[in-house]
Amino acid sequence: MSDQQIICTCENITRQQAIDAVKLGHHDFRSLRRELNIAAECGNCHRPILQLVRSLVPRKQPITSLLPMSENAQKTRHFPMPWKHFSHAKLEQEYSPSSCIDDIMVHIQDYIGDSASAKQQLTHQANLSYGDNRCQGVDYFPGEPDAPLVIYIHGGYWQELSKNESCFMAPPLIAQGYHLAVIDYTLAPKTSINTMVQQCCQAIAWMMQQKWDINEQEIILSGSSAGAHLAACVLQAAANNQQNLNTELFNQAILFSGVYDLRPLVDTYVNDPLGLDMDRAAAISPGLASNQLLPSCLIVWGAHETSEFKRQSQQFAKFLEADGVPNQSLEIAERNHFDVVYELPNLLPR
Image (cartoon, rainbow, N blue to C red; front, side, top):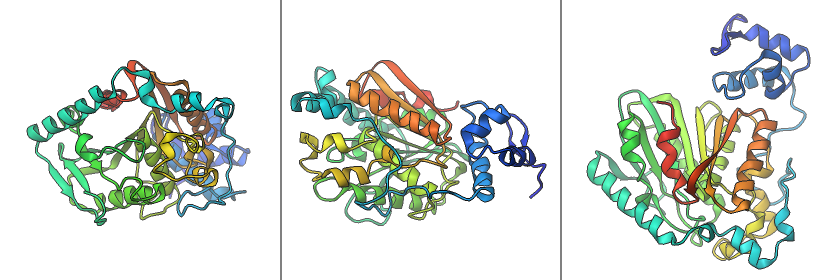
């Protein structure tokens, strides 16, 4: 590989320039970005540059992995814990997304009706099996030839909803040319969150073996609420070349209203079907682990959400920045925890 090869097309930075910067002591992407005057939102260069750094600078500490998940996994982050000082009533209110809206069923009915309408309007393949018989598989909506693929993981606090209510964004995405794949996974209490992560990884690895006419260099992963948590875990698996995924797979991630530190949930109603204790919750919290080599991330939440849901997203974005991951944060006015994901088509490159 020539040292004059361009590895950042937005700034025409050569491999040699990056090597020289590393030799000057800039050993992480954030430091290199400042040295080479790369825009923070640039997603063209961060992975090849980080791979270059990895080849030149021995790691002092390996990336913390969520898969396989260990209750005794070493954590590299101190995620703030203001929730420790909440009353039980306050804690449950903060981690109840519906506490900020009048009627959750209005939004659930929108999911159901809009998803059913999408399937009536659009050519699609339903219930494609990715090899796990415990859930219904994948729904796939084909887009234009050689167009990007958006992969979506639904929310529902790991215990509710399915892909069947989660295809509502298909019409505007397909109108823009995108392909869309919506993943199903087994819910609690039938299985653990660890298994849900593995199923999502399995589904995506299966997709990459299909003969879909997609642009394999433009794979965008998205998820909402619990789905954003699962998506973050999938990104970490890919960054560690685990579960038949690899560092180069995803071009971008868009995460809506995620929970990145699960420890506050242990003493709430949410945990009843999950059965987490503090150690298990910490072991499956992407906000407590290193996030090096993740793709460019857009962290999104609605203006009408609890302070804890906002804080979780804001803190996770800070850790992404610290790990050298290009990222942006966005609070969307007039949106809440349940309808903010309708903005997904508006957040994608046109």
